[in-house]
Length: 62
View 1: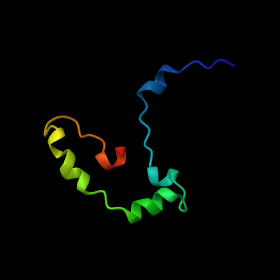
View 2: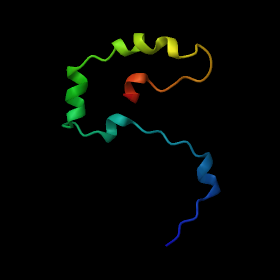
View 3: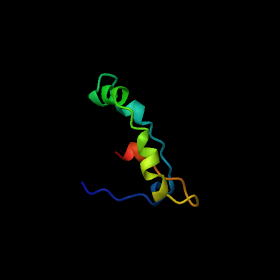
View 4: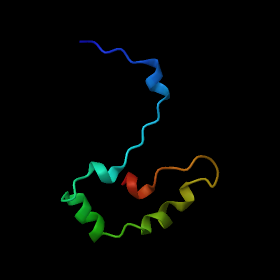
């Protein structure tokens, strides 16, 4: 069956919580606890403008 996108859906904002999507026993949670990636902020700080819309957290991108 062919779906037709409802024009009202384009203006709907959906909020997603990543913690709810990742199971408690998933390996990525163990990696997150074991590795400190906060050094990345210093490495990429000069790549971001102080103006404009806030970006996605660089650690989340990795």
